[in-house]
Length: 217
Image 1 (tube, rainbow, N blue to C red):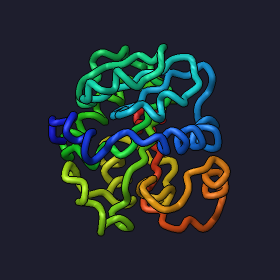
Image 2: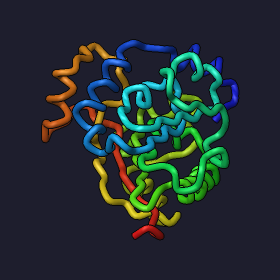
Image 3: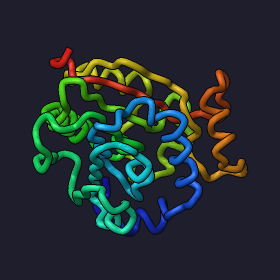
């Protein structure tokens, strides 16, 4: 990803309070069922901290190359400014739930592979990695509107990549959420809840994948 992170966040990805509403609802209606109160949660590429701030668990860790992250994370969140390709600051076997939203399309395949290898040693025996990101199968028209997108992934290629790098995919939803909160539709917790439980998901262009290191199985 371009290292001009200030320029990126001020133009392509400015703060939007609607994302706070979205992630609060996503935690309440989906992600909290995957995380235990005693868990350690790691968010890779935290940005504004929308996910990690909502997490309710024993320990929360946020990583991003953008120094602005420090202004947005809640007190109590351990924050590391640096690349996700270097997780040496973490203790081995210390993470229960790793999460990345809209991250790996910004990195090269080599950087993605390096991150997976680093993370493997940081996950506990029952630890997992969950990815939320654009599915090129559905978002091909808008995919490169973001000038920092460098790698293309569909639900098939992302799963194959994980499998090829020593992870086993345990769950995949090819169409989980719309691509952006920038739309004429309101962002309301009740509507988000109904969307999550609906078998029909109009405008869904982001995929959700959960995987575990193959060596732990």
